[in-house]
Picture 1: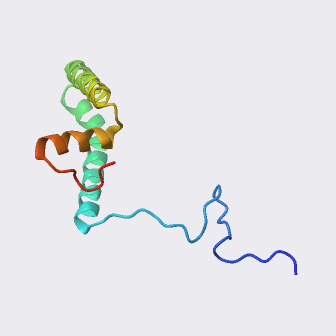
Picture 2: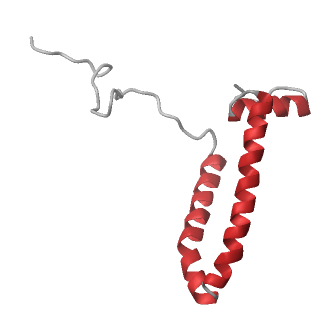
Picture 3: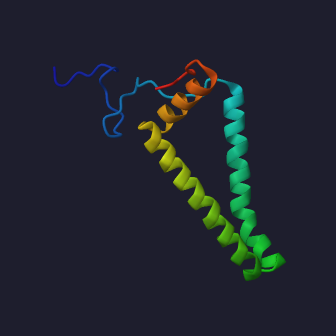
Length: 111
């Protein structure tokens, strides 16, 4: 009599998501393994960096580190922006367009 909800329309309480919503997942075990390894390596670098800086020289190391970090990051940002502007597409479309020009056929998942 009151409010009857089917499981298809019942909300989980998270801004309009539905219990039966399809979730993204990895398409292969290798993709999942590589993502885990990349995450572990990244976390290792984050935790080990301050310890190594204090142990092996402190600020002497930080000066060239920040110089090279800025140079590499700035060149990467400039390259990505010019790459996107030249193709007039988003990141996935830009790479799909470039790969299809280079190898002749569109790649899987191209926008």
